Length: 281
Image (cartoon, rainbow, N blue to C red; front, side, top):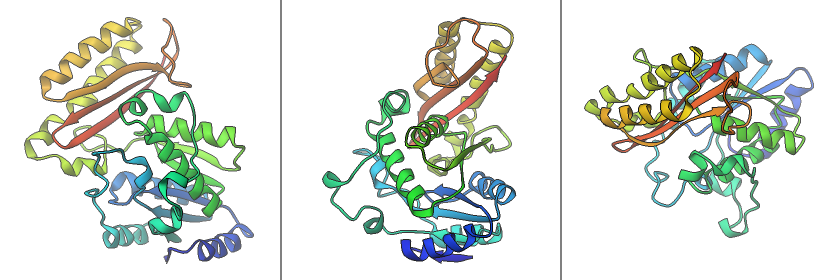
């Protein structure tokens, strides 16, 4: 596996590979787990070459969030990616990604969808996400890019950006990897202590219960989310939001909608957990 931090070196490899095949790209912030590796595995099935990036993006962290303490495990991550047959690891320093001061940095904003749910709780977060992904797409120039569906809103923001800016990248969503008890795999699960880890799977259980009710024809969206929020809080989590939305655009659904997504975010100790389930009826 080639490891590079320079954009010109990155492009020289990718340009050569694209002349003889296609390239898939998996952007990450490192501290990798099996969910990340599942993206690399899917990328290997879809493309001739696989590029993974590791970059902890300061632009998507708000004031008081965990940028400085975000786990950085580069050597371990590199070994894991090498074991998955990744062709190239791109790990740029901040000064390459953002050579100008923050106030002078060109930013990418996807309006509307970026300001709700996680965007409302973390103002500016999705501007940081869209900006870094746009820059990485321009640097790597992949044919395919893969993202986990656990970050459902993020996936939608990136898809909208790619569509609106006419980027020649196919964006693929990959199903969420879960622990045996249902907890969605996340780098931030490492913040949970032993007691909190036993509580955390309640988030997925609550989402499953709502999904079952929706599949059964229940259209009392407000009643379902109110009861589920109460259940989560009683379990020991602090609910940020728990909503039912139309899957294609995150708009509040009308009764009888067929494609829905149930999304939730909740605080537990130092961790902010997010999860979702899609419902097709």
